[in-house]
Length: 121
Image (cartoon, rainbow, N blue to C red; front, side):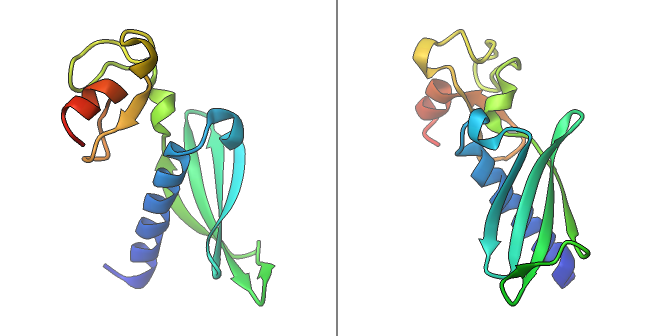
């Protein structure tokens, strides 16, 4: 894996963890955060998914002419209309206050918080 591909993958993984931990209101349709002192990351809504783009920081200034597209992602809370990968019930409503969707360690599956907790994440 070349350096650029590795960086894109690391930033995308960081972005996924970040949006899974913040609320829908905070994320909105356009969110910015610092990956590190060299990269600023924009997470933005584009039709049916969030996109992640990283911009280099040079001497403390954001360089918008250069950017690194990192890929699409989806926050766990957006999966509330899907079915739980563990129990199969609809998420977001069937398990009471423990219905909120969470991402399973595989990264591609989602489950109720209570189901994931019972599976000992």
